[in-house]
Amino acid sequence: MTMWEYALLIRRRAARIDAAGWEVTFHWYGPDGSMLDVTPLGDTALTHLNNAGREGWDLVSVSEDPSMEGINELHRYHLKRPIAVPAQRARLGSGGRGVRRPRE
Image 1: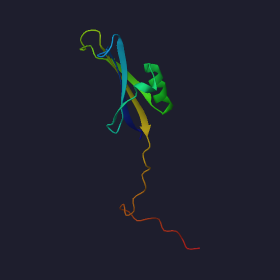
Image 2: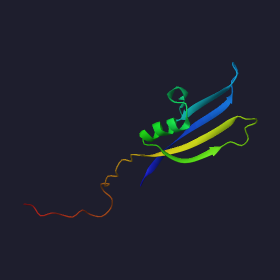
Image 3: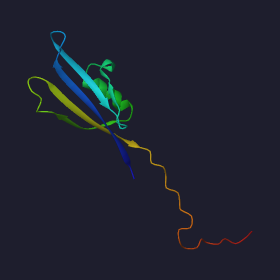
């Protein structure tokens, strides 16, 4: 059975507070609940998605938050990748008797 872990990349575009122009930021929300500002690692969503792809992440869906007022943008990139599941070992004493093998 395949099990998955999930992550979220969020892209925000908003007016700069300290200067004229726009600011685009990217934040990574990992499967362990961590949040990391990954803005310094690239300036486009494609750069960040390609970086995630190299780490085994698959893009599942993209959503935009239409409730953002003005010309702010909020894009969410939902990602997943398979996680290793330890193989199930046969349980001892599971009921019936084992098969006897003749001695050599």
